[in-house]
Length: 312
Picture 1 (cartoon, rainbow, N blue to C red):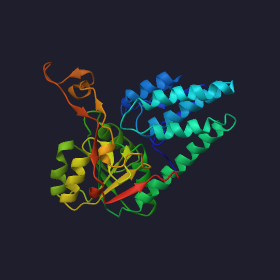
Picture 2: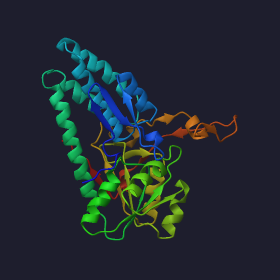
Picture 3: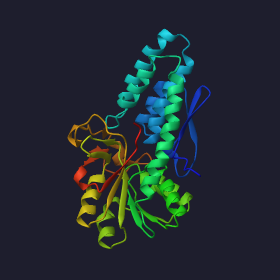
């Protein structure tokens, strides 16, 4: 089965991590190099890689140092330092669950590399299973709205539907201000030869009212134990509208974090320049301020079904 480049956008090649630069898509499909954990942290903060790419980068950064450090007594202290730095990069993304897992493995230096590599293969298989489970929810001629980007899962969901002779198409929000919808999702869906239409983020209610969409699926950056999710800003209002128009709202959900409810999830506030500029050019008067929460909370009551990534 063919995968989108966004499905597994980071790899470790020798002493260097190679990561797909998602900020350059769709104009250029290029990879950049990461040689240490400081560069990995900068790549995460700047969103050169995101979503599953950031998860992979966490594991491959650890693996890089596991291979690099020869003295066993230095391994765990070094991994602890790396974990602290990685955990501080994105407040809404719970890397600590992942870094704690590696630190636990690091107590047995002889097997830590095997454990990391084994988990990554397991994660890949579980992502495929998640896409297959999502595909089973769609019917022939469904038109599906999505928001932001779920790292290669939508083309894979579509591929499973094709195998079952189900023809589906997509509406994609542009997803300001990083345009993940128009730059990433539309690109990978078009590349996989699916019918895809981009709409402004503000057009969702109009599209629903016209009856152009009959299903919604999004990702989630964090899942609280009660089923609330944190996802790209704008997800909450789409869920509210889906409820109003009686449109099923599905979520591709990660394993639950330690957050009890959505109220316990910290919302990352990104620099306002990301909202006030496009391609380095300011689009607002100099005196104007911006407020850019990168995520919002969608209550579990608005979610028709969670499609879980089951790793335990």
